[in-house]
Length: 161
Image (cartoon, rainbow, N blue to C red):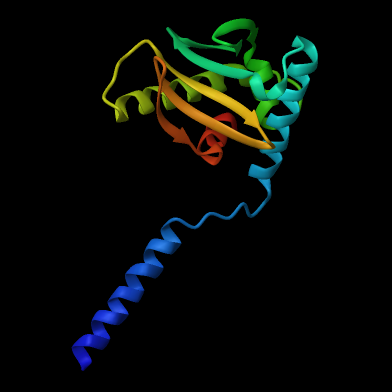
């Protein structure tokens, strides 16, 4: 009887450990704030380009020593997005002087880590940002194939100092 109890406790312990490992709390509301900023940015892009916000895709590519980000619709580049705009996208505030270089370094490192985790050194790797139905989706993409969904909280770390 005692052995069964230990197995049940162990099973419960494992269940709790698993539940806690996947628990996520946005204690300070930062993720919610960034979600609002991203959705607001997409609405602003929509007003400026005339493209419905749910049809806009923002794609970020790694290039030697920098990142290039573009607004796409139907696979075509509509316009370039500056690093200052990316900072605004995540912080909600206008461009902060001197942060661009540090942010670019952090994003390059993040993109290198993602590429390495997939064992691919493809130049077709990029990150897609989508804002649809009041939700933000961030995807790691190789060519036209989505390889991973990226949690917003993961990317937030790279856009903050």
